[in-house]
Image 1 (spheres, rainbow, N blue to C red):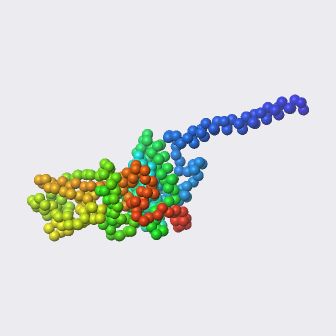
Image 2 (image 1 turned 180 degrees about the vertical axis):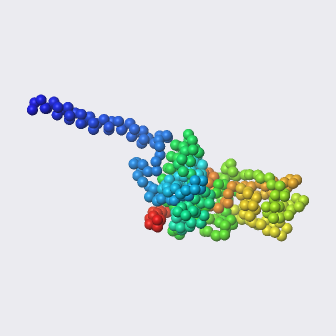
Image 3 (image 1 turned 90 degrees about the vertical axis):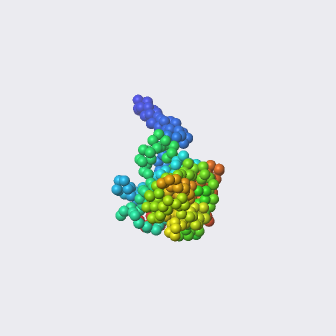
Length: 340
């Protein structure tokens, strides 16, 4: 029996060593990961944060260029939408506001079961028909060496607002947004048929700093007449603006009895905005526009300007969407999941 004791001691020592070494090896890596250094791989749900409310919902996205349907978690979908719709180098609070608009849009769509323009089996496309969406692989390709810090920043914006949407009287709103206003947003009925109480014209002075605030386009008189179906001949006068919208854009133009709306002119001439002015120069018409987009709802550059002045995402969305609330969507998530 005395010969066996050294063996027992050796086995006990080796067993203790096996328990201690992994713990020692793990500590340095655990500290590095906890530091949140740029360059660490970001995954949709980590042990540190646990699954978010968004991660429990799945979205069937039709990938237009691939011609196939991709099922992704709502969280991954929102990261792909925010990254596609707003520059990742925008202020964090602006990205959070964009995450709220994106989540509100898709929740409203999923609840409505609206399948217009969506292929069988999908719930939404990845195009401007709905919301532009980029997969993680596309973001890696688009961002290159900046991928790690950009995706981390966008993911943080999505997670900070997880489960939150914009509501009016308890229902998800039409969370319209555009790139740059002309200094004011539009009333919804000045561009679309429906008058919505939360889509009112508000001032947005921050947009003057946007690189997309002003633009010029040159159109030949022949092309101008053809696209608008009007005749201006050799006259220096190019129609008469007879009405403007609450957002200071062109509402109506009278061309010798033929009246066109600012929206019609913008779309037919492919202008950046319906806030335009023009002058004839020989055989051409030089058109100057202010703003970029339809002008309804949140201005993205305006949101970024507000954030740069210290406003948070709640301040931003409540400025651009009048009378709304930021509400939990978890009961709506449950309804969406139950419908599938």
